[in-house]
Length: 202
Image (cartoon, rainbow, N blue to C red):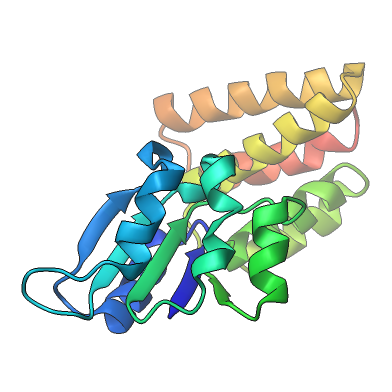
């Protein structure tokens, strides 16, 4: 049996792979495989057992081999294929999917505060007072330094999309805010609120 595990949540993916393969399994680097290696992996027995547990890592990067994996879908061994990313447009993926090979995605979830920061930052650009009210609701449960870091990420995305004067000003003001938070004794959330109030005036 072949199963494919992929996604950026490597901790959960690895735990699921261990449930499937057990504690003892062989590890094969997929990028180094040759087509001639496949029969030995999927059909060959080991010295100690006829049934093997095998983990193949990053084989989708090896296109010639990846496209031939489907030919061994009926293997008697337990084979886990572990990928960080899968290109669903490639023939290797399509062939395995069509053949009914089980594929599990493990995706890291964005922290809830990331969505809140996005909403607050967007509101600040339109209405600073409303943004401050929104910010006050999360002050007791959020870290101000992390909050500012997430705002910087949002501002950088906006700058990459449209490098206008307003986007440049936002990055400059966020840089000032970051410096103020590190060098003054003023309560961090007060500095954040002041920034939010100014943002709509740029």
